[in-house]
Length: 131
Length: 110
Image 1 (tube, one colour):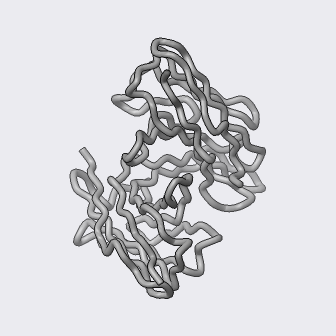
Image 2 (tube, helix red, strand yellow):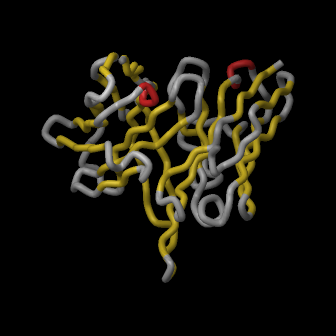
Image 3 (cartoon, rainbow over the protein chains, first blue to last red):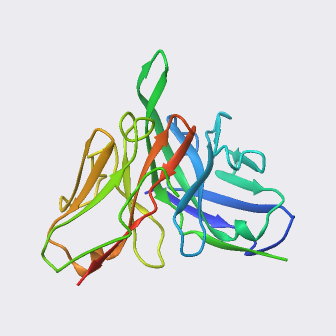
């Protein structure tokens, strides 16, 4: 059974870079048709997708965070990582990693429409940004 | 303010049925598949519905969902106290070019 586990510092100083790693076990990070994603949840708030990357290098980022974010995948270690630059107090959140299943349901001349699902999720790790 | 709108809370008695709505638009729900997630207090979210109405392995048939146009509904029957959680809908949005989630609905089993 696939298992994901986040790790990284629980405290980051303002304007520095938040770095987290997600370790994947019980399955292959090279599985086709899957991305590996990060989602965060500010205290008492809802879910916000940060971005996802597959093992071949294809990336998807939330446009609102794209300039701050880098997601990388290390197939040798079966890990993927998140770097979020220049953090502020607004980036204080529980950060979850998850396998991101994504495929096109159908495509028209104007674009493609997708089935997206996040399953399974890691347990999450709280990161506090301090001034 | 999320592009997917959910009621903040719903409640029902044990054994009863509850419905949770998720309303969006043509750029998200209407043309993309919808997923639903269950997040018990203090725990990570868990996928309970994908592709609008499919249940992952291990999810009981007490959980079902449907979609019509720009709206979707999650239905939970035979409510149990263990169903108390926040429930989120999620979809791709072709206009925003991002995954979007609803604000979440807190289910209380009275």
